[in-house]
Amino acid sequence: MPEQIQSIIANFKSFGVRRLALMGGIAALVMAVIGIASVYLNRPAYETLYVGLERSDVNQIGLVLADAGIGFDVGSDGTSVLVPAGTTAQARMLLAEKGLPTSANAGYELFDNVGSLGLTSFMQQITRVRALEGEIARTIQSISGVKAARVHIVMSERANFRRDEQQPSASVVIRYAGNDAEKSAMSIRHLVAAAVPGLSADKVTVLDSNGNLLAAGDDPSNTSAARTLGVEQTVEAQIGDNIRRALTPYLGPDNFRASVKADVNTDTRQTEETIFDPNSRVERSVQSVKTNEASNQKQTSAPASVEQNLPETQTTSTEGPQSSSQNDRKEEITNYEINSKKIATVSNGYSVNKMSIAVVVNQDRLKTILGKDATPEQIAKRVADIQKMVASATGFDDKRGDVIDVSAVEFINGLDGEPIEQPGILASIGTYTGTLINAGAFIVVVFLVAFFGLKPMATALTASAKPAAIAGPSFDDVQRSLPTPDAPVAAIAAETPPLPGARAGATPLDDLRQKIRPAPQERLARMVDLNEERTAQILRKWAAAPEAVG
Image (cartoon, rainbow, N blue to C red; front, side, top):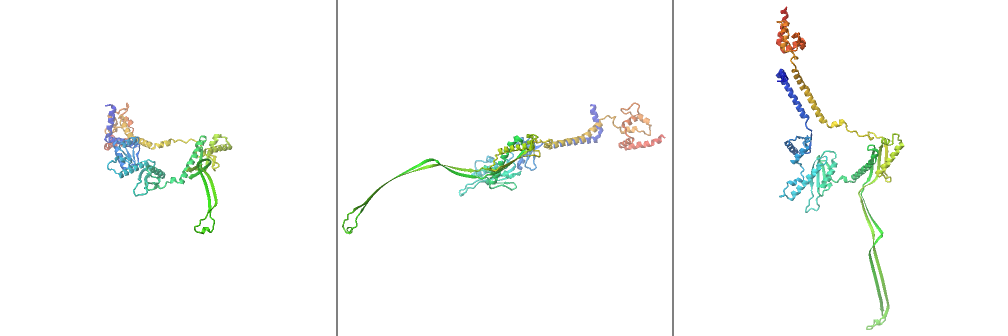
């Protein structure tokens, strides 16, 4: 064997069984601590695979991922599954092949399991309604903030003895996470109404999982107040955007602020007008009537006498007056069609009654443009130019009573066009705080274990591997180096073998004292620790030696 290996084996043998067992235990403890720390602190980061799952889906997903050898973890709420970062796509593809997760809101896939035989019309209608409910619920769950949704639809029914047809209706229950549930409820109402034939939005009721009514009845967004408010906000935003586009190239985005207040009229107006044009007439019909009248009148009269009263007496008649007339009449009626125009105007838009605009400009920016020596008159003139620009961009109308005000003031809180500071190093480090803490903790654990475990072990091995000449004398050497009553000191020195590395002409006892350099009290204490009985015997001999010499 090489001398180094023999030296190491000899050093291990010199430790003894107890020291070797202690060193082995320390080495095992160090390796165990390092292994546990490395496993615990270097665990892979997890990312969310699915959320809002049912317990049955969580169990099935866990079984599939375990069979595929993909690590996973379940969230504290029991409805989410997490997998190591980088394996999300693989896990989702694997679960998609298995048809997981299976949602309780079944959609049109219900028809895949429906046979064509033995299916009545009632069963077909129920399956259609269930499929429609499931599809709508899935769509609602895709809205941000909606964790779960359940939809119930009542379709319209036609009966033989029913005069009025039943209108469809729907109810929706959602589990929402956020503060704007009412806003989402209005969108859900219109979504359900558009998906169900014949269903209006006011027939849809939306509730949350706590039983709070979010939307029901008439849509409040269709009221005149809500419509007026929405139109005003739109007009004000548009006018403010026009001001920003006009002033940003000149002053910069952070060197001015604009505020707009618009008074909008959203009343619905309907105007009907009929216009006649007498100059543009057209002959519609002509009616002609001709009348010819001719009449002759002749009267005969008998004179009144006695003969008229006698019987069988013939009276002679005499001719009376005669008259004749003739009348001709012709009448012609012409009907003309007068050109007319009817105009019916329905206005459902809006009109701006009055507008108030306030613009403040950073005075320092104007001084930068005009120069440091700019006078107040120059600044006022430039403000007037800006006011004209704003009036032109916003459609300012003095006759309507619009008000506009532009002022130059000193901005505070950094609104002077300075660039926005980028996130510093601390902000960037904060993003990776967890990873840095894990890495730092692992380094500290390894350092402590190495310092308090491996270093003492290495020191012990190094000390044991030193040459024997440097090591302290054994008990026998110390005993032989001490004087005894039976032999003089010179004889003892002659009998004691010289130590390695001893100087020429020096006694072994002098070399021993030079190498060991302990005090007599320390040597005596060492002897007592090694063997108390033999030390006591030596002391007795030392005590009796002066008497024997004397």
